[in-house]
Image (tube, rainbow, N blue to C red):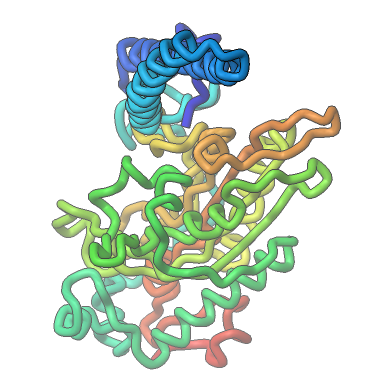
Length: 423
């Protein structure tokens, strides 16, 4: 969430920056400032009314003591009127604050200067590419056919149990899935991230804290009776571990990792491009989250990018990194790098990780601050990244490692799987 004072100080710069997202935000920003002026004016009137009421109350007591009953009763009548005015002003203040909060919640983050202008994924910038794309046999299959051939994943059984987008992993498919989760967690903890096991449902405050609400409300599964949401990513519960905290500067950085299933409605996702593991309603993901001093967050972002690079190098998967343009940038992000692995059998790139810096956007929603070395309370910067999302990594392994004799297992995963080929 943007800060009102920053909007006031940098309104024109914010209007210009948000054009990268394809937004004309001038009216929205002016509305925020108008609502803040109303809130502050109402607060001033309320404070004045309460102060006058308190003054009259003291005078009434003195007048009664001195026997000036008539004057005291007149002031009591005025005090009663002031109390009614105070109630009305308090309600008006609450309404103004609610309207201001709602307006702020609907504003996206300000893109970093590095974010290129653009309208959609076609305008993203490729900033890095590594790995050789393997040449496959002419009879090579896409992963959904491989999953069926080797009895690794049963998509139809998932439909029977739940519906489309909820696959069932079987045998060596389930073991490979578990191996990837453990491998990712081991890599993250070896890099200094503390592992957490967190709830898979969150309350509304958590959804607002990290910015999924109200922006992604239609994409999240909602348990109406309990007013809870199934998590779309471990970022939500892990980051909310620190909601409302005041940290000391020497506690930073805080680095976390966690594995969770993730749940996304993905409304309107149809067609061949979402076949198999390409787009699911339930999938597994290992996440990394960092709480950083603002001075160090972009160096931390670079470090997260390097960390994901190392994992993909060990898996020996061909990948590229994209810097997302304004039109493709997530609502909460100031700068995002997407990792994509090349699916040789599908002849297309598949997104497997997003690594983002949210700067103070989430921290302001979370009221997550730190006391700096100068003694002042400041908002932290929050960052997160997938390390990694499993479905498309698994798809890339199945497709890129297939041979006429079976599917080889990446060497780094063999100790985790207990087998080196699927045949």
